Length: 116
Length: 115
Image 1 (spheres, each protein chain N blue to C red):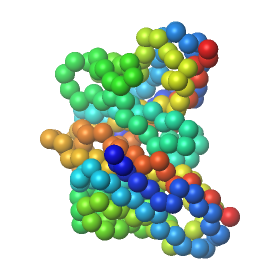
Image 2: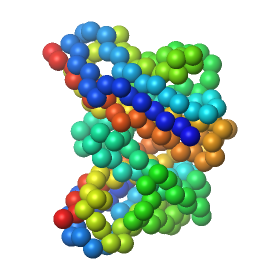
Image 3: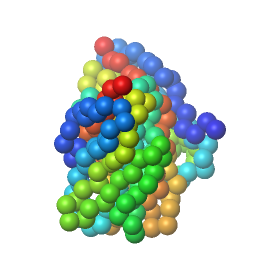
């Protein structure tokens, strides 16, 4: 079972370059999420999509944009990369359970992004 | 607002000894609580969750967690730790009354189990 697939796994960018991180899930989940993980700070939510056709800002959305292309795919775009965006980026998905929000999130293995 | 605190950056334990990873939370209403584990160069893997009912929740790989409403805690436990349990552990909370399905994660606790 593939679960949540992220591409690429590694990337090095120069300041000012743009890039799109891809994420796809095969679990028929409604909700998808993008997080960044920095040492000592846990995971911080960048954007999320509660269902196909909707996106909302999370805790740290500045400098990022997202597209929920269809139910399976949710991409994250850096329009003009900055060194502060050096991080590990995780995509996750979850089903919508009864009462919403009590279903676990399933994570991809991350994209390690360095911006010079 | 919702928040999570994991007061210990690292926990060291000898193999075969009990393991406890601490988590406290803050929510306006009632919480959904989760524990995840992360191995090197991998994404987070779900261990267990508390929704309602029995305060002692059992999960994967022999882990369990106890929900304590009065202390707003959700500590992760394992009776006998294995070297393979060495990893990074995250506690997460969602306020049931909040809109959306957003989790707030703690900063993580690194567990090192020594042979």
